[in-house]
Length: 153
Image (cartoon, rainbow, N blue to C red; front, side):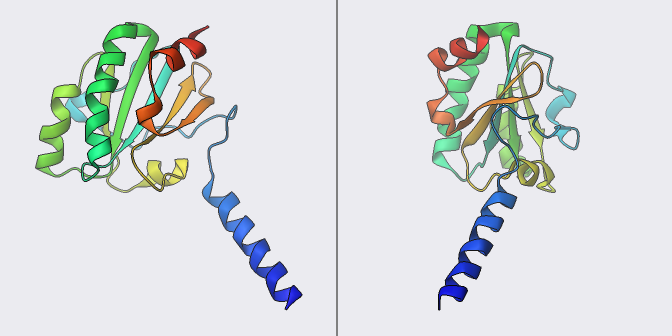
């Protein structure tokens, strides 16, 4: 019985470790495989917030206006990237009004980027510094002005 428990715990920890592909302070996977809505690729910025979006999630949809307000407030200091696995016309119509110089929308139909980041739920996101390292991860409803200011120092 103890051997079975040890094997199960080892498998559980190995699976969990494999699922977590982004670690704070480490470089994040590139966003190269995304198709950019209206051809608007992310601009270089001291901070980039990558939002993993699911149109079926009310919380994901609610976060869009807050993220847009942050992008306007911080201008060229913060670029927001919204990534969606869904690319149907309804999703594109929902996301298109948010595309701007400070906010890009990427389509990840293959799920390659979601998988590279280990994303299992939305909304969630990763705040990335200019050196492409994760400095914060969590629910996008927690991304606010004090958090952004903390990492702009």
